[in-house]
Image 1 (cartoon, one colour):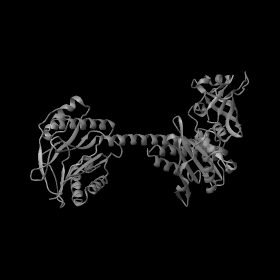
Image 2: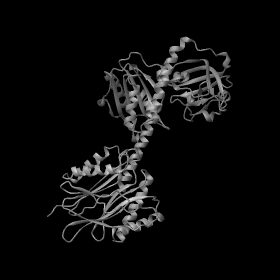
Image 3: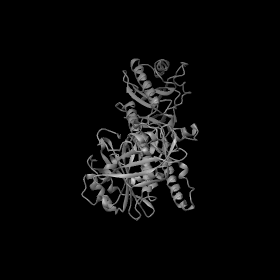
Image 4: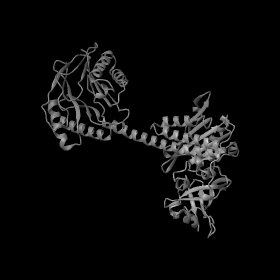
Length: 565
């Protein structure tokens, strides 16, 4: 008795007691029905086969390894909608891990004149009856197969080496054009199932040229549309299409735009294949031949299907990474607060995440008013470049704010209280930090008072370009050691129009650069920028420092005092 994949489809009538195994493959490439003999031959209950991709589940090489999709006769027959006799020996995997040699037939079926699946009839045959050595006449075919498999392997290597979506699509296009087609088109399903044509690329005069006027938002994908692109985006198998497929009236806005594009570029033959992620279709890859007169064949259709499957996984990984980056950046923006407005003072901040990390980390800045009307400035660095470091950073920042507000004391006393508390009520292991207070003396001059817990020293930049690091003795011990060392406060008068720069070590460290040279470079850059606006000063300072192969987070807080009244 036939067993349907779901209760929604009419059940085909499969003869009882048939001596051959039968499985029916629907238009999405899944097994929708099997008969009793198929269960017996394959050693698998129907429930383990229904809804599965028969190629992934059953089709194997003689050694039991997975059969490459471009080399599978049954897959080519299904994709091309052709009747194929299973000459020779096709190897199927049984449920117990053994292999069975089968012969048989694959026959397509249509719904309303559109290919919508295949019926595969198979029977066991002794493998010794069909074994024949490979004749030299097949050398060209084997060479073509080797070329296709090489291209599949290259696709995997190239697409898995980046998590950037734009770069993934660029690499995908360069892989297939002009080796397989003259044009490549990528459509992606976005949020709320909207469709966007993100890439239309033509290979001309040895170059890949983007045709952006053919890209952009697309009409919605209708469930009722039977046209190739809409069907593929709903999960149907890849299709070879020709101008004849678009000769009739279009049944959707997507079909209208697809026909207009094909007419504009002069399509002779095209393949439309789904970009599949885990459990869903992410979009479609369309390859178009305009100059090449030979239409796509079944072997090429299977090859494009395999490439599109691998590309779909790369797109899914890239999209997941982008979503994680957006979440991380949003989190980081909320963790790093806005600056208070202090009359007479200019302040600005910059944060640049580590280029190869998760876009969040342990570097932070802070500035807030204290009850005695002084302004607290903080720059710090918790070890790490991940969400754990960001969470620890938030703990340190919040604890420091509470201690500084509750007890208006010297910076060294506040940091000492924080250090002693960290070990007991936080997950922080090690951290460096400068806590400073900026205040206006009775004479009207501005002063900086600070303590340094193992952090790079503040930089003072005079308005005439003179610079100096505020290293009044060695920095105190880092936070988190449980040693409770004595901490020191320092004071420095701030000349009119001078700038104080607090920063994390990402601004002075780079691959292969000694720390002393990094400090010298920072001082030199800052001196050259002394007369710039504070925003431009910070932008240029960070851009020049990041030019030197920086691999760490960078946080920067700059303060500029007013000139003489």
